[in-house]
Length: 349
Image (cartoon, rainbow, N blue to C red; front, top):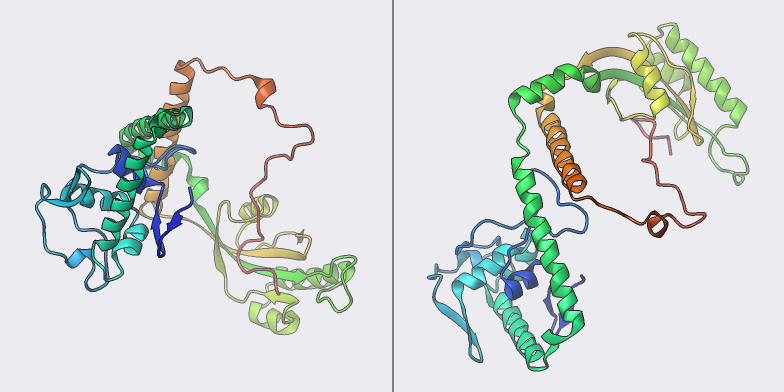
């Protein structure tokens, strides 16, 4: 929920700060080993303790003298707040929120002001019996469910441990995923049909003719620098003179399939990207080292384990959904597909 501005520019967050102060539940960051599922609050933090918040400016909370956790540092009516409670609330905040609140050379004063306002409002709400309203009870029940789900998700994430043996086995079984080719790319900008007068670009036929001329030069083994000198036109034609690396999944599917199937020195056909025509010449093939892709593989395997655990949990819970109720509305849009690009240098502007 958006922050609520109050008083002279002060603000009170209704996210992790409120959760920590009102409920005493610490929520921050990502659950270990993966992201929290949609709609679920992030996982709980480490055990409480008086720790210095993130602060980088002189005079901030980081430079304040150490205080015993049990020392009372704030009172509102009959309610006393200790240094430990304040520090725990600070630790619940994201690093950015910590810097915003305590990193402005004011020490813990902004936090104290927000805490006072929080207590005053909550005490008044109790006096008005707002905790007995159906809306409050529904909100508390929903928050309880989110917090419980968050904690269980964190446990599942912590159990999703990937061993070096699993990483090596995956790498050996998915070699093609880590193939890399060095290519030279050529892009010819087109003028779309119906474009305004003066719009840069070649007509469809001009672009095709130019693309085939350059492609033949590459197929003949001509020097890329000489080809660029002859055909490159600023904002219209781009001819690479130095190869760049292309990984699986970084090009449009049809172009990628064609490029990775070629031998060094071979050239793809010309592909139409609407706004431009493009093709590549394959310079070399190579496979990335295991050490360079270990983190990527671990993340993939960890997420697979988390997904499997969640699917098993749902299956064992005998979930039922009303298909008619949850069906997409008539004429609803199809799910968006990930955008694809030519890969490498952008279409000339």
